[in-house]
Amino acid sequence: MAFELLTPSEMAEADRLTIAAGPVDGIGLMRRAGCSVADVVLQRFPGAKAVHVLCGPGNNGGDGYVAARLLAESGVAVRLFATAAPRSGGDAALAAAECSVKVEPLAAFAPESGAIVVDALYGAGLSKPLDGEVVEAITRTNSAVVPVISVDLPSGVSGASGEIMGSAFQATVTVTFARKKPGHLLYPGRAQCGEVVVADIGIAAAIVGATSVRCFENDPAWWRRHFPSPANDAHKYSRGHVGVFSGGPSATGAARLSAMAAARAGAGAVTVLSPGAALAANAAHLTSIILRRSDTLQDALAFLGARKPEVLVYGPGLGSEPEIGRFALELMSVAEGRFAALVLDADGITSLSHRRAAFFEARKRPNAPALVLTPHHGEFGRLFPGIAADASLSKLERARAAAAKANAIIIYKGPDTVIAVPDGRAAINANGTSLLATAGSGDVLSGIVAALLAQRMPAFEAACAAVWIHAEAARRFGPGLIAEDLPLALREVVAGLSG
Image (cartoon, rainbow, N blue to C red):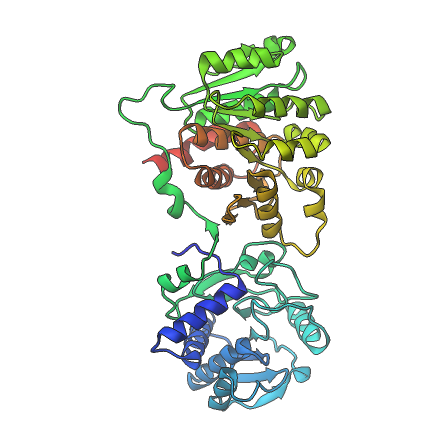
């Protein structure tokens, strides 16, 4: 399985480079694509009484003409509906000329009961909202609840952003080519795609690499080689030490969730840094986690000097007052030689929104620690209001812009979590689950990130692994999950990766 996600422009470049390298030409690629679509129809719906193929005027429509021809040659009853004839001289016109199925106007299309619809109207490169007879065809199809095979992406879904451009088919299966596109994984488009089948049409991995692709589907296969495994002679501090700052007496649970998650994710030692007033509350619930009093920056510095943790978690349960943000800035200013990375979550992010200018200036310092920010949508908007308000940006582009602005790794949480780093690399998570929509689950994620960083996993891969592990643990636990269940649920997932 390949994990690069190609934007529409990168996919066009991959097509161009493949054709330039030979021996296949444009119509050859189109024939392979259309054959892949026809194969899916025949394999998945062998009993369909009819197939209605809807073709647009571009290359997506050309794939549809090829599929219609091959299905008809296989003995399937095919009706073909088109918006307009393909541009003369193009590959789609050649495909249309090879197809003997009678072409009917799209306005005449009405899905029959028992039929299959092949949506080959518009592909990943759609740049403006659909309207008119295309929207009417989409509405009729979605209302009829018939199986839909979409070519490349459901017509109406942007391949770059996942945005729905006016209206979109609800696909049963989407057949795309060479690689998935961001729009297959970003919501709301992701919900329209159904099952996504990636067809090999002969575009080589080297050619995909030549497009300078910088976005990936988050999957263990590409980061697992970096996943930490303790050496035979490891001791607790060689496995990494994580410090987690706790809130006051009535807000200690979030830090403990982070701490337990860090321990379960492999950190050899985890310390909760607790205000004096919350020591008793924390002590009543902690056994394997170290507890240390920390009321001031001097207390924190004493801990850093004595115990030398690799990573700190700051934010869960701390409150969103501006002073919490001031302390975060102070921690960053004294990081050099004391700790390597800081994970900022929850209240740590919100509190910094009151000190944005100082925060962004601090992140420009050459000795600034590595930083991971884990905002959900609301926290992201508070810390990056200008980026969040830019409607022209996709979630992927927003995460990249925020990573560059903050000189930090951004884990932009949600059902389609995006992980982005300042150099432009990004990953979109595909195993997200609504089971994580429960209070405290984000605190657990922060602990996992910290543990992997403390074990010296490269930062981008550590963030991606943490997001995947977090969701996989929730999936395996299943319904009824609450945040307290997650640290123990990590055990099976981490063991599987370490083996």
